[in-house]
Amino acid sequence: MPNTVGSSVTLHEAARRLKVHYMTVYRYVRSGRLPARQEDGEWKVLVSDIQAFAAARKQRPARSGAGKAKHGSRPAADWSGRFEQCLVAGDESGAENLLDDALASGHDLFSLYLEVVSPALVAIGERWHRGELQIHEEHRASTIVARLFARVSGRFAHRGPSRGTVVIGGPSGERHALGLTMVADLLRSRGWNVSDIGTDVPAASFATAVRNVDQLRAVCIGVTLRESLDQARKSIMAIKAELPDDVKIFAGGAAIDSDATARGLGADAWARDPRMLLALLASEPVE
Image (cartoon, rainbow, N blue to C red; front, side, top):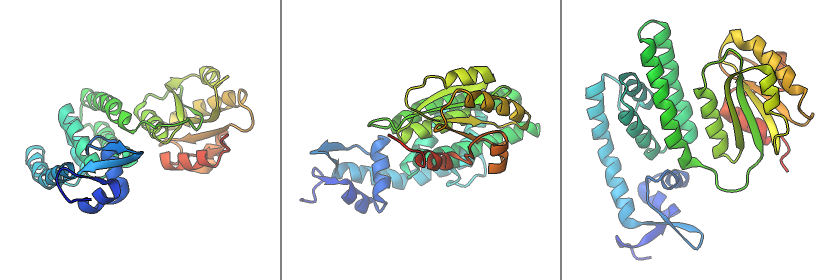
């Protein structure tokens, strides 16, 4: 194929020109950062778009340096720290731009949520507990993240048949819904249909939510507070009464620190993190 600005190349060739892995270029295309079109079932990228993208990447460190001077002493590559600063400042536009830049640098939805967003939220929560932040600052940060999730997760929507349904929720006493939202988005990106029933769900209501669910494969209960463990146990007992034996219950969250703790609540296994949860789901039979 002629090496002209107006010609197009495959994603493999685009990856070679950008000096990144093929899957990184694929994520650029899926997130809308790199324009592409399909020809006979294969993605093609204009050489001119590759050149423009490469030029923009070279300029990005300079902009990050400017952000450092504005916000403080975080290094330019500290995505989570810089995201935290935007959230504390109430800078929703800056937070959104930072997530866009993180995606353009090669993050996928998993690393974006687990390595950028989640550590920033944990740090903000710890700062609030130490009295370094006001409650309105912590709430504002959570509200910004909830809105950003709605904008980002849609870019990774799975195309194709569903692998089945997972019901996910938190027991009575739980108030932190963002963790469940992250897990739900990550599962959806991998082809699972998710019924996210939110937090502070009474045991009887949790049991009702899993009744007669089409293609139900698993139920996941998230517990962030140790004082919610007893309610989690009651929810799991109520859920089990509604489930056939082949539908498993997985427990995870900050309050569950081992497989023994999860099984002590009545769950079938401990989902240490979303990647572990996907591995557990993959081990379950799927029709």
